[in-house]
Image 1 (spheres, one colour):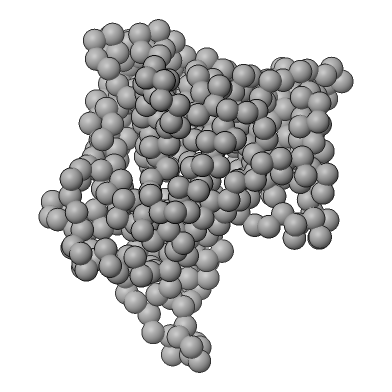
Image 2 (spheres, rainbow, N blue to C red):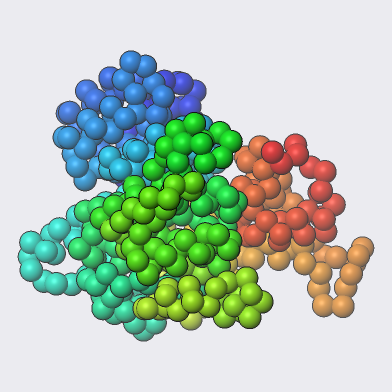
Length: 450
């Protein structure tokens, strides 16, 4: 459970964010002005502050500065409109943990808040260990004691103190960003920024300007010079998730970064030196992308200085009880346990969605159980498979589980019809969701995706 302060001059937004976070077991305080927030942080310690950027007369940047002045370890997350990304990047340079662009999904907010709280735990443990002189690497968010998990810890311990480029490989949902943060927090850059970037979520043109910045007049709409994320992360670490989805122009510039530690902003001939550690991640073999000429072989070998493989959950079944306890703790059920029969069922399941699927399953069970203890009837495994045809069956012979229809409809309603966000809530890919909608005859349900 984290102590969270929510700051937004829209009282309705404060209520919605507070409700979403309290549902997950956090202690949440909400205020509707930056001035109130500054008064509170002077008298109370919060783990995470979630603040809107545009407020009058005291805005989000002032809240960020005030929080960092009195409580440097408190994580600050900035909520910003799409057109304010430049200011949000400046907030990262001033010490913000992350920024989220409105309109956002409340589950996404919850996950980022919990990442921030988890990083705070790691930072505190790291400082304590350094003071104690034990030298043990703090990776409390890397839960588990299975042999493959211990091997992953060892690999992170070896590479973290260096400045070597790391390529993290693993299936979707295995916790590659958790491993990347562990590398960062066990390194000499732990007190600097860790900036995650999902290369698959941003178009190539926008990704190039986000990473490297641009010069005024470089393209239509470039009304002023802009600092990119590589410059904003100065002294810290940048995490390039789904690196295989980056386009040719971005790949060429990344190669230059890794070879020469220099960048050029878009439309700017001036070379700028940077001091940033690069950690990349992929959930598909980059060798296949090289074979199809969609990924540069020279960039691949520049990234492959130190590969780290994150094992799938099916290979670390012994970690499931510990992971379950970890998620129950985050949901406000500290000390609670699942029935032995339920744990046995979870250990024998194949987990195609890995740890993300387990996290989503525990959240569903938490919601379904309400004030009661979680029992067998609250555990809904393989939700996405309900719409798959049994062997040899097609068309009208499909045997459908009504739970799939109900959960998909609920996710679509919560996401406002945005199928990408709905798929994220359900722990499946967007393509899988479209397939389920088609098979269930739900293609026209809900508003069109924006």
